[in-house]
Image (tube, rainbow, N blue to C red):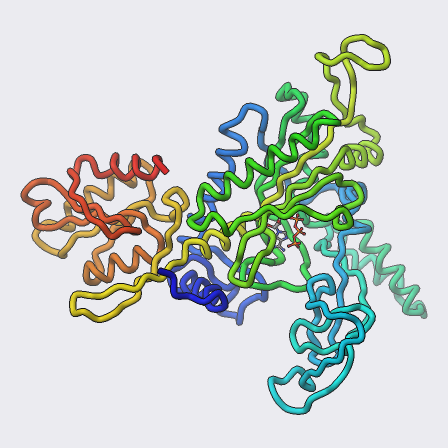
Length: 507
Ligand code: ATP
């Protein structure tokens, strides 16, 4: 039974992940950096396990998809061709009442002209101010005020500079002693920065387009085929929110699937189904994942279809992955700007014009683009469980457990000597060493009572606890306790590693 209300589940997950070493605020001892997080010893294992399962499913289990690992910094022309320099922006609004800065497209909407009331200065109580919702049709998400600035577009890419010349030195030389207006100064500043400007990638996808030919030719890939990549992306998000849901630095798992024009609808359906199957495979609450089809007016101008895979987070449905049918837009744009023909010669097909074998075309693209750090959050929320039970004295108590899928769980088994004597720790050490040797993540734990140790491992999602007790010393068996049922069986010490491996692999 899960007692948490939706509103406090997120707070409980945040608290558990901090307390148990999954996720810490970045630079915490200096007061923390807003919206940046560090993955602790258990968090990094969970994140890597999710990434590994994605890679296995998307790359290793198929012959039509290969991977790359491209650099985060790319030639600035990439972002001009892709449209990110001119168009990758969010509408930014300032609240004149509480001074919050927020994204217009994510703000609570209300019909223009509706009468509303808010607290002056965004305070929780005190003087009330009356007003009406403006033509924009939204209000401040923090204080509910309609006293807002006009929208301005804010580019989400992080800009930095490359090379030994500091653009500020160049600028200083240029403007020293000159009496320039604000506009002239701005122009000089932009010029100085532009010569060495470089951007942190806001998505992993573009590398798959610009390396299309290299990958296709070196690996002799035949359309349809895909190029996959996982890695860090950076967006100077206007509103960072909800723990690791939206951060400025995050990780993505993306794949570009190149297919013949005309077959994109079929492949879009195929990848939507495949991706839903993948998410549900690791979920306890399979109904918490849904496909949302984009309306025609939601589609980017180059896309002919798009769906989101949404997860029901504690605050409601929100995006986890986008699967877009991007036509030939990306390859065509990069071909145009680079002057390199990014097309594919299909020898098996007849050219409809000449009637001869072989036809050249620019492949269409289906792009399943998932957030790895968002996946960590979704699987943590899905796994967080509170169960009410009764202890030995008859008192009601709550058991908190992370029902993580065994393949995602950071630690697969805990090996626990019942007591710190009678040779039990030595036997437990010998068992856990077998796990270390086999590369199966396990932990040796002899601190506190056995009940507290079980509780600790329930809370971090360890699927199996192996306990060395008095009987072990007599018949070379240990108990194996299942996290979800708490049921215990006895197995031979010699089989312990094989049994845990077999159970984890069988899921
Ligand atoms: P949103 O509408 O939530 O801003 P998006 O549509 O801009 O997301 P995409 O560009 O399609 O996102 O990126 C693909 C995936 O990358 C998203 O579905 C999400 O899981 C992840 N993602 C995007 N931006 C962020 C971010 N700032 N922090 C964490 N994950 C992100």
